Length: 312
Image (cartoon, rainbow, N blue to C red; front, side, top):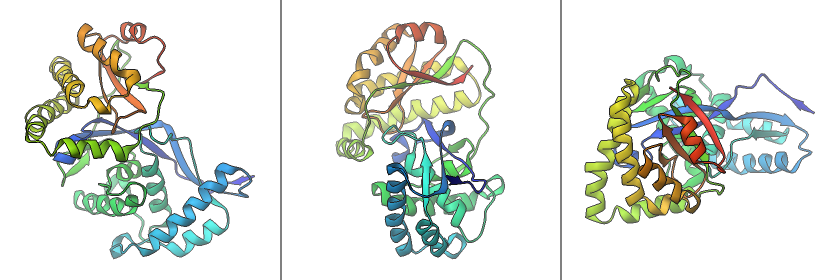
């Protein structure tokens, strides 16, 4: 049996724009995705999943004990450890290695429950958002080395976030979706992607001057233009820049594109029926698709698992 203490749910996130670019100061647009969620619960740990999660939290609590967080963001580690010994686990259906932020939701849930001074996401100042992001970065570094703190921050806020640059981010309003022909959708590549190795490849590429130049002058330019036109709902320039972005990734992010997706990526560019881009670090997991005519795109993408996340 599971005792629920009216637990807040923490949603997965989708980076619509800015994957990799944000490492080099591009803009980013990230939205919560409520299909996947996680929450902290207690149980008698009768299943393997629950026992593993509880053990995982135990190890994680040791890591958090050693973290030196500033007074405003202190955690009550003692009651966290106490809860762990009473059967705390993280109940989540967020898939790992799919680019939707599984460790981010866990970090957000722990901070929400155990932070000594409580914050309200609706009215956190821009300055505190920055500080909170840094705190989350330290907390998440346990899971995959260096972390920007972006994932947990978005999970914690549960609001769309516009990343202006490495330093600045703010809440943003996404245009209301409506039942049009157009859609943003996810395609399941059928394999998981490891974030670590993909980021390794990216930094390897960054060592060459040619790649750095095209990333700055082309990728980041198209990326930021997509964000700007999407937020204004200006769909013609949006798709024009999106095609350039998709083509650039096809040329330069080839190792990050899962093999199963390679042909349909090209098919989209050739037919202009839809355009694909990475969702997170790539290598597997989900791929993002954008189309003006979902019915047509869906026919062309038969045999692939798809989920629509936004209509326009």
